[in-house]
Image (cartoon, rainbow, N blue to C red; front, side, top):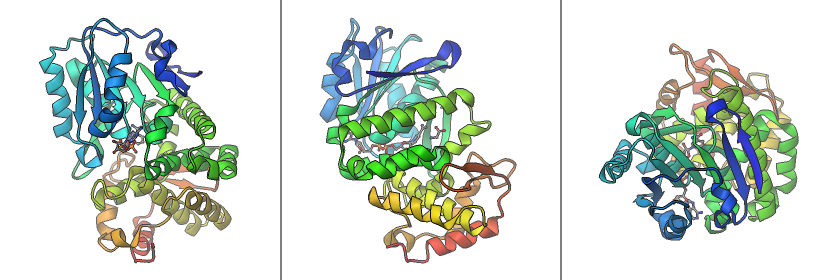
Length: 368
Ligand code: NAD
Ligand code: GLY
């Protein structure tokens, strides 16, 4: 088993990674399982793993289980309310434990519910998608979406542990695997050129589902994220870089209609737009933009807005969405731009005319 520690003082927590980990006792070592444990999942994951995980969880009381409808379109206050109702029904007290078993949608919502229930109870993350294993289960960002934008209502609430059993990836649909790989590419692209080169070297194995390579990718991604979260838990500085591609991506994902593009696909397109903008501003070498596109394509990710979606996107509406991004300060557009592979930075007060031109071009219909 590989173990990392997110060193946040009294709120420090382990990230444990291994194939078959859920069957091993050390998965939950040191964690207290109280009377009230609520296992939150979605109906897909619940069917595959719900009963098994419920049986495996230690403690004297069987966990209650709630299975929410799957997909980004259900990452809502309505779903969060269902979690609150389940907690109320079981009369969960302040020592309750919420267990998130699922992808980033479930992880973000269960984490949000845990942050709010009685002003905060513990949350254990058991991610089941690659995206959740490499990104969303670590770092304590929790949220639900509003029609106006993604993740607009949420809280920082660190988990008490992250238990990653990479064997669960065996049932993940290929498109979801690729979406997770977009976040893996992100770490290399934003700040780790040697990891980017490693992904290039192993792209074929990763997309083919090679378990050893995927486990390595999970470990390196979690190590990167844990280091950044320890340095800047509430995103006052460096953590913003983890949003490389996300301001464009979130706007496109929301404007396309939640569920039409996967989050990781929107991030891939968003990284390409941020890279292109950087190159047009004379900051990033074209060669690096091409290298980013090449690796994303090998991982079967979109590098432009697909034509069917582009046809119904309005560039001004996309820009309006970007203005509601959480990184902006006092109405000024803050974006993560790029000096090339491994070198993202926060750009203050980006000229919205440049961004609008780029968005106009991006939805002009040659996205394939
Ligand atoms: P998801 O949670 O919607 O899961 C994708 C699909 O895969 C779902 O249909 C799910 O039922 C299914 N699934 C999950 N695990 C499976 C398995 N092992 N086998 C078969 N099917 C499985 O999507 P996601 O890509 O995991 O997460 C995206 C969300 O994560 C977005 O809402 C995004 O905003 C959020 N996110 C949050 C953070 C953060 O730091 N909190 C970071 C990145 C992304
Ligand atoms: N996914 C970006 C972050 O956690 O900060």
